[in-house]
Image (cartoon, rainbow, N blue to C red):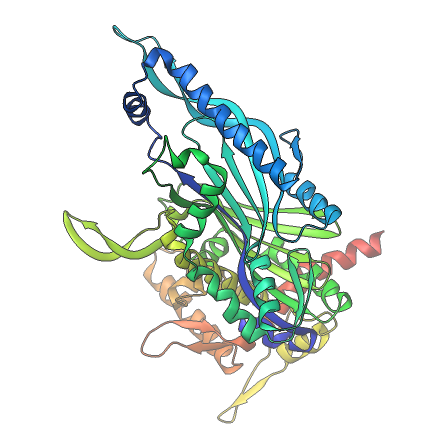
Length: 510
């Protein structure tokens, strides 16, 4: 990421990374039929009276919500499930001037996990079932987190979801610290002190999340005080978005560059690159989809790279912020260092990351690393207008120890194939060897003399790249890595050949 910031520093005002939208879910220890039957036994209720029992407590939950809305003088609205509830809640808050407390309660009939009674051997039995019930959406404006919505299903097992936004949290922290900033929706367009802003953003993961989320649950579920007394919600992270925002001086600084960034990401990032960004390695046992998807959105466009249920996306906010965002829905693809069992022994090691809120810090680490790799890969895209200078520099010969080494021809297929080979995303972390490039350029040969000849050819090419300072040797290894200069110059040549020249030919033909 620092390479990207350094390259475009004249256009930027700063950067900050923080959680964006994050969705927590709370589960009571009632998610299986046996637990529901135990609740019935504790309340001296027969299974045949299950429907009457659950309807009565469902009505209690709804009545308590209506009473809370009436006491606060806030609206209770029944809406269509497909309507954008967050937008409606914000409209109500702005219309009524609400800056703290309950904004409204929205209701919609939606699918949920619940139970039903079926005939059994000698007696009825309770089984898990996917059903539809009335769901309540409580919208609050919280002093710490800003706009928050809490959704609760009105049927057992009363699952709760809490949704909040890390940018709102950061904005309130900045205001409390007296740091000036400009905000539009959930984006910060300008911040006076980005270093301090990053420190405040990092405090998000250190909040006492189980306590905070349980307090929200107590506000919307009055049954925790009697029939569910002694039970506590177990909180998990259902979805987390972590964004890195690069703030530009004005829309004119970002717009032309953003178009080139989109083209580069769409044409040049392959499956290996997406896996590398997310800290994974593509191998023969990988089972899942890797998809690059670009779509138009007002007022620009967005590109998304998806690996199974997780993805990285890039888009602009209000023409002044370049946002790279990692979204984690399935954390088990990543690792966390914790205690676990290996071969029957309890050890401390790297295990698949679960959804528990205790892993929020690891969500931030994984996502920030992914955003950083993505922006580092985009650092090779030159500023519009610099292309001619970059290519001229690449074509110039260099001298070393009195010997002249030829320059590279940005239009020659052989040179472009070499550039593409060494720039592959899978080499971004550990570098590459002579053999890696040889297989990319010339393929595998069973003839030993041919293989040695190809290895010698690649050695000469790598030495030529090194003399131009496009490559650097990794100490105490036989591996090479692409230098910052190499990223800039070689990627410029590939970018021009792959994207700019076809666009010019299309424009001429039109």
